[in-house]
Image 1 (cartoon, rainbow, N blue to C red):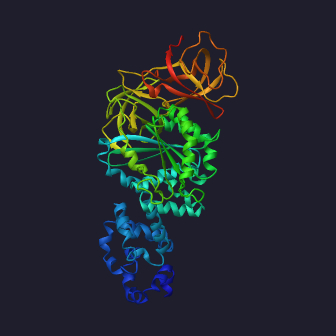
Image 2 (tube, rainbow, N blue to C red; image 1 turned 180 degrees about the horizontal axis):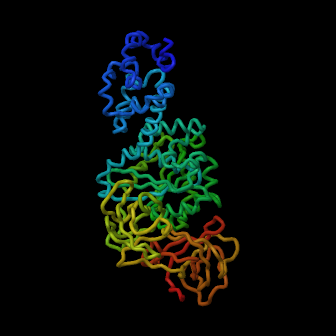
Image 3 (cartoon, one colour; image 1 turned 60 degrees about the horizontal axis):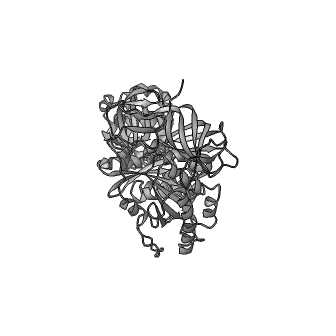
Length: 571
């Protein structure tokens, strides 16, 4: 063995498995040493004897021949040889590989290290796949009515968990992916968070268990196509929540029935109040209140607790502007177990209404004007083989290769392609959440809050406007010169109240004859506001979605209002 010992060190390890074959083939190896060394895998050695077969398709053996010693030792180098022909169509062979892994030539003691890595990679790749798998199954998506649902409520009420559970119940997330999330969540001692990971894709969101950005997903029922907008509940991320609510047709206010949690969310400074008010200001007409965590030991599907939450909420929601008889619907549920989301809950005999998903399906259709001017407020933008923008089409229709104008910059752009909820489409109607790839503009030239319009009917832009404002919460008085942050559709801009024009009587609607010197909490006034930069806006009368706004300062919502008149700039 001495003469051979110098080169093929690790052959000996393989020979321990099949020593007799080595003895028989020693003379053959001496004769075929040029090409036989790379294809030495023990089990299939007979297949690789004809050297001229291998010279054509893979010339690698010849070129690597000089450093046989390093190559046989190094398990990574064996891999390209085992996969010699697979380089042409890697994906197909990986899938085939999965089943006959035992009979693989690389499965010997040397190949073992690399084969486990391969299997891990394959598993990871497979587990990343579930969402695209579902997307192609929606060829009829545009035929169904599109409804955008925003989940709002106090932090930790269970918004993301309910969203994840709905996606699982409607088949948008498969069981295997959820099991993977559950495993990972258990490792972090956060078993109950795994459902929310279907919407909280960001690592930071998963580590802290708090949604930061508005999560997007979609699901379908028999009659409708729903886009889920999962808004953050934390008070630091209210600006993101406003952006999400501005795209919604319908809001789901999630409240926790657990003792103490409902009270915290509903007290002053809790997000249950603020979110409900912001949703109304953003133009959401219909509100479903999900009383979540009914399965909690402190609640145990108690009708008393459910009624208690309802009694406290109704007066407040009425004050915000929702009609309790028409606009609000209450229902109990459990996001973690999925009770009363798709099927009626056995443990909740006292609730006789429809479960959540069937209730959404039974809602009346929303009236939208498809013949109006094109208005698409931009929510987000990024680079991906061109400039891609996200937003909800508020009115009008968009088709491929259409020429549009980006306001307020007046850039002419062309729609190269667009996706409606991750499904490619040729045309889109109002109410759809779109991802558009544009030509003729750079990503740096776009800001959230810009608007895509058709050239024949541009939206108005300017800096100064008159608006009717309701002061909701402010400790001191507000005088001309007061600065705040304006949230109007998807735009966020700093504004200054330059003049107070008159006070409006809440009951009669009469306007005061004299100019007020200041306004305070609970008063309604008409004021002139001036934005720091040019913004796109319309009067509330002409286009409500772009004419309603909120004013925020120091992390609180101070006022809500509507645009009455656009004032042309003197300069």
